[in-house]
Amino acid sequence: MSMDIPPDLARHAAGPLGALTAMLFMKGTPLPRKLAMAAAGGVASYYGAPTLAAIYPQISPGLAGYLLGLFGLAVVAKLFATWEALDIGRLMRKRIASWLGVADDEAPSEGAGQ
Image 1 (tube, rainbow, N blue to C red):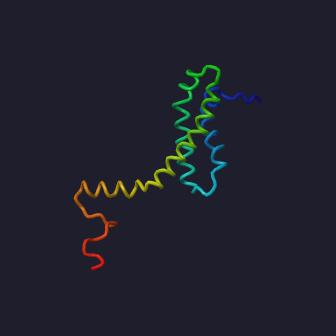
Image 2: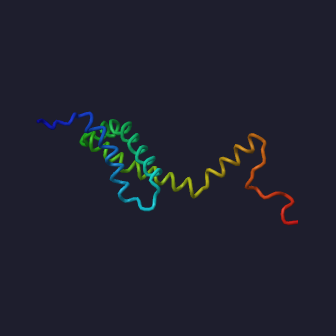
Image 3: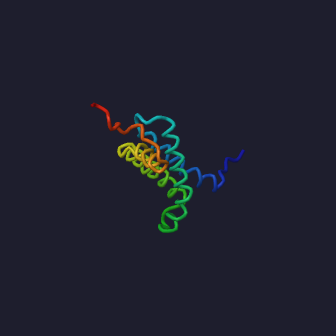
């Protein structure tokens, strides 16, 4: 019985494997967020590996995919942390509320405390 791995499968599996490797070092992150970051690392690898392999011909496409999956997940993790630190969700709700002309529930009312 032959165990030949198709070259396309090996090349495309490298990115998600890199993302899964990076997840080993993430402590305290909820599972849904880890899965989203792994998917983003895999997508970055899928689309970026051929370009990276073309720029650096000494790197195989599989290794380029693995590295992009590994570090792509790290970039996405940093984006999530920045999103939380800047409280972008609250800022977006306030902007949308101002566009729609509705009151923002988190803003203190003008007569409060009097």
